[in-house]
Image (tube, rainbow, N blue to C red; front, side, top):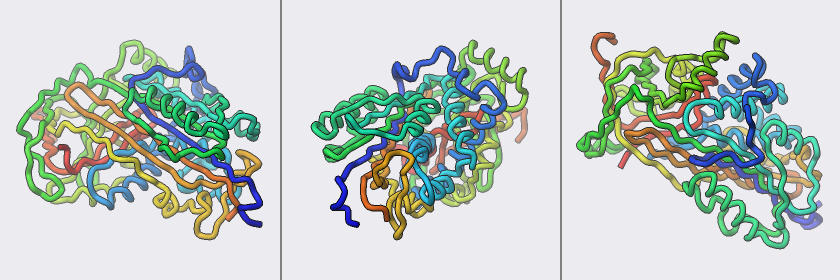
Length: 444
């Protein structure tokens, strides 16, 4: 049987992580903690399990991206969520490979409940952070009901019909407009001009926004002549940020980690304290926030890449509980917005070739639709800016599938001067999940 014997169709799968916008109507909830499982031990543990999955996958991908050198920023949360939604339609060997690469728990219901629980927890946590999901399907196209119900229930993703077959570019513009709105124009033209064809069948969109100030306890001052050693070890002067505050501080293999909390509203603190009093085991009422910025700084004699190789999911998880110490912290102000990256080769090398019909293996997305589909590309783009006021971040992921034939001393501040390349993360302390992960070689 040849591809010519089939009508060729495309499935576009999109996820975006974004900043500064409210939830779309379909994702609104008067109490996001009332999602199934999120108000129970099961929901909390499922959320933590997904946090571990995100960190394990994110680190593996980060270490591969770091091999090329230079600045990077990704959202493991974005990519993992995109592929988890895709996983809901996978079966057989494709499902097994994706589960292994994404480090998903064997209980699929626990997995989907975990994503729902994590999203609910994030929506209730400090800072401007919300999530929204939507599916755009070809008019008249039938998708598996169980697949649609899973995405509706666990990801709150309603289905909207679009005329891909007759107006692919108009459909592309509509979705790009939605993405731009969710990201406050930080992610533009996510879908390129040739991204859709008349064969496009489905687009799954997830948007998240993040913007948060530092807590009132941290007062950052800008230092205009901060010397930073770029990747070639030449020193250059950049704008630095300086604070002396009670911050999380922990020795890690090859360096140190410093965690800087974001602001928390009094209402959220009372809610989190109430949950802690009831459950005792997973909510961390540290008095500041459930979100934090993490600096991963190599020792002076250690290259950043060597520190990155020693990072593990367990190390990242432990930073959610880093001991507070008086720290004099100085690091560069920075803004990163790298070009779109195609993650296909990375994902294949990480162990999921069948999803892409590579290495002689055939994709199986039979739980999604009756058509024989395989992933043809996974695109990702992210943005982050860190300054004296706080952090703003956005990201977008697009997985494209095509139909085809199956083939210190507490009395004195600890000085941490980040004047050399470093890695960073934005972490949700309740689950330990690193929502964003990156490295700065040159902050200019």
